[in-house]
Amino acid sequence: MPINYQQVYTKGATETGPFQRECAERYEIIKPLLDRFQRRFSVFDLGANLGYFTIRLQDELDCFTVGVDKMRGPIRDILRQNSPKSMVWLGKHLSALDISHLADCEQFDVGLALNIFHHYETDSLKALMAYKRLCRFMILEICPPDGDTGAKYPHTHRAIYEAVTNDPHAELIAETRSHLKGNPPRYIYLIDNGITGFLSQQTFDARERCPHRSQCQTWMPVDGEPTIEIAKLEKRIDKVFEEPFVPGINLWNMILLNYTWPSQNWLEHEFEMILEAVPHDDPLPWNWIYDGKLHAIDNGYKIKIKKFPCDALRLFRHGAEELWN
Ligand SMILES: C[S@@+](CC[C@H](N)C(=O)[O-])C[C@H]1O[C@@H](n2cnc3c(N)ncnc32)[C@H](O)[C@@H]1O
Image (cartoon, rainbow, N blue to C red; front, side, top):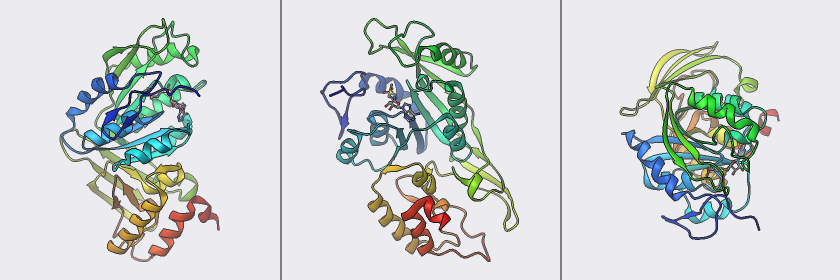
């Protein structure tokens, strides 16, 4: 059986079993960087592997986390054992283009990108640039430019290293031990991408589903509540307003991107309950944000169009296929 890459975190403890790459020491480097948040915040963990950081961060800090990994296997049991309350897991291979499309419709406070961009064989810089649009603070762990020969796609290492170190906002935080014998250390960098983000699409699939001109600006200070300024121009709705921005993920995006945590049964029950409790003039899944709980967005603007909870539940259950029926 292959040895786990990450250590396993279960119910407040780091397990002692075999692993390739230690996580507990890296966690101690990363956690203090997040102390700057004086409010609940969101974390996106690209290539989250066994969820060590994704699960532990939401356990210990007031944050909501999203872990993404293409790999199946032990993560299923690890999630069941931990039963994380403030977390989403996406079982998905995210291409560089996917990250770019996600950045058009979502914003996260923190982006973990630990040992991931060199897994993008041909478009690692495109993935990195898109990730910068998706996340306000990025915490990266990268290979040195040369000599990390056992790591994936060594031909990408120098370009990634230069793109990170040439960023005027990049700050070297630590050198870490490589798990590959005799290989040089890796580097942890922090990049502050600034307080604002721009959204041009409602969801990951909005280009095809509901093309309209949409412009939103997010403001994500670390010491105050985040807001979104919406300037939408379309036939039915003409609105320009500002409202709180919930650090979470759009429910429809979770469905499109193959969420495997929380469980579908549990989330469906939550959705049914909130559909009953909160009247919404357009309750379809793209008008809800999940951060451990469901929050309504874009409510109270539609006078003529009426969608009903049963439409919302049908879409929730059947996903994108339902749109074409
Ligand atoms: C080297 S491991 C790093 C794990 C973790 N970030 C860490 O440093 O402890 C890379 C992980 O990224 C995942 N991965 C690679 N390319 C991916 C992609 N395009 N989409 C989603 N996951 C990916 C792999 O399955 C693997 O679990």
